[in-house]
Image (cartoon, rainbow, N blue to C red; front, side, top):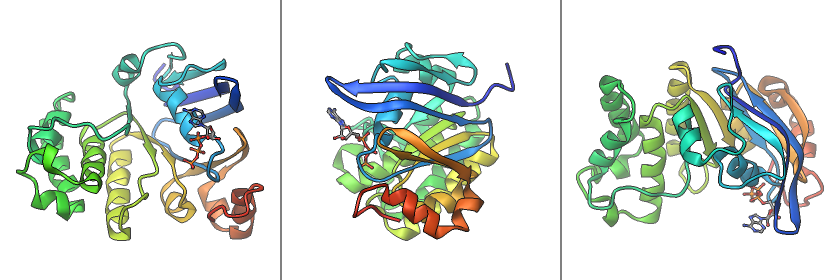
Length: 245
Ligand SMILES: Nc1ncnc2c1ncn2[C@@H]1O[C@H](COP(=O)(O)OP(=O)(O)OP(=O)(O)O)[C@@H](O)[C@H]1O
């Protein structure tokens, strides 16, 4: 069982009421691998993440996390299996930024890592660091997003799923976050990253999938894709005139 992949998504069909969004969608993240899921707006990337996190039940297909079939399991079971997904910006409102980060790390037994990761995460977010002793309830929207991402890192997950971490953040912050994700990966975490910014994604991951209209249309080593920007642009256009490349 130790060699089973970190994540296997196989043949997922999923809908919102009568609107089918995912069609036979499959991907895999090997243990220790960093994988990106790319694609233009509205093709179903976030919907696939909901299926992985247990927030949307698929019509067909399976989701296995670290060797366990968790297709019908509640989110709690997936988290117990090692999944960590940035969903929303929830924190303990009356606790300070630092207390929120340390608290998030208490689910793992490595206190040294928790303290180190808390400081490393705060170093990436000077705005948060300046407010480290301030109650989380007093943070701005952007600062809450930073805290949500920082907590994920401190949680030391086995399988980290990140949705659009570059969105709305300054390039210097994105660079720091990428370093933190790399450090987590070096500690053994497998990573699935959904990104609009192809350059950010391909400079970080080992392999990438491209989704179009709810299904995968390409799967390639990141280095191969990065060396062929014209192909990437064509894949990312996918019929959408204004897609980002
Ligand atoms: N709760 C919902 N109810 C109905 N339709 C939805 C819902 N959430 C998403 N959709 C629709 O499902 C399709 C896929 O949306 P999804 O958010 O998965 O795309 P995405 O690839 O993540 O897009 P983006 O890159 O813009 O975030 C879109 O047409 C969207 O309008």
